[in-house]
Length: 341
Ligand code: NAD
Ligand code: DAU
Image (cartoon, rainbow, N blue to C red):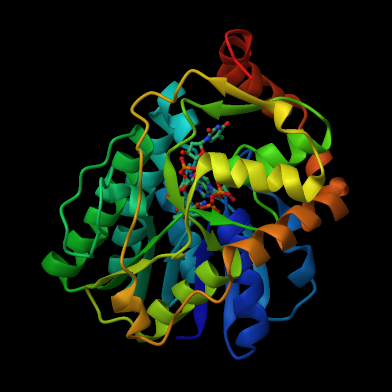
């Protein structure tokens, strides 16, 4: 392993992984390949932009010619695929881009990687492929029951990685992370959205009864988990990266308001997300056996995250304009008009 292509490396978790790898492995060359969609942001990579073992190439993972050119130009031997459309609500509004990037993009990367005989391919997937878990915890061999177009597109991408391992003997590993939070997360996702809205005393649209459960994983723990699986995972296997911090959405919301010293009256119960999964939960025993475990307790991680958004308005204020406002109107205007506090 020497020349590692990190696709989607200008996004939230991909950029944390790039920052981690550039610092931890000076002997590797880290090449970030990213289309820079609304969610891609070169500000996330400013901490490494002058490092000698880091390069950036703009491109689409579903664009075969550009992928081939970049793989050859940098003699890539390893691919870590973070590139995705990642927001469930956007997938409900329009699934098209999700099929393009999460399914076709994964396939093109695998296929070009196979042709050029690369070594390891790590597909970054999600706990959402297992679907809604009433009780207990999903293990890696459990069946897939994805419920949103996003979850189904992620299942398609990782099943393609599995097929390339079984059929062509490609060296693939898969990670399935749980809900991730931390600095540099695009403010459409629950924690950064509610934090930045509450800072501005704006309403927080909590879907349905707010009793859905998510398992929260700090972003640096997620990045270290992908590193562990990339280096030590068994070829052809998948690994759950669970935060082991299950919380109701309503609890997370209350805690954000407490940290910011804002009133509970900002919360609005709005009509639910369509097909909304009530609970995700996974066992991380298999990744723990590789030596990984989440290090951040949720209360510590949430406090650090909220502080980061308080201290880095330069980062998020310029994002919450233009495209973000179009999405906000589409997603929330009608919901908030019929909301209750
Ligand atoms: P993100 O939306 O913040 O970033 C996605 C990145 O992919 C952006 O930089 C974007 O520009 C890039 N991208 C999108 N389409 C592309 C294309 N066609 N070609 C090249 N680049 C493209 O996403 P994230 O939250 O950082 O998630 C990263 C990965 O981790 C995704 O695969 C996601 O499914 C997975 N994941 C996310 C979470 C979470 O809670 N955020 C949890 C588990 C797994
Ligand atoms: O579980 C892993 C997944 O976590 C990742 O694969 C996805 O990329 C990531 O976006 C995330 O999906 P969720 O749908 O769980 O995350 P989101 O932040 O959108 O929502 C978290 C919970 O909060 C969910 O139950 C919906 C609820 N929610 C979210 C928003 C944005 C609200 O109640 N109101 C909101 O406005």
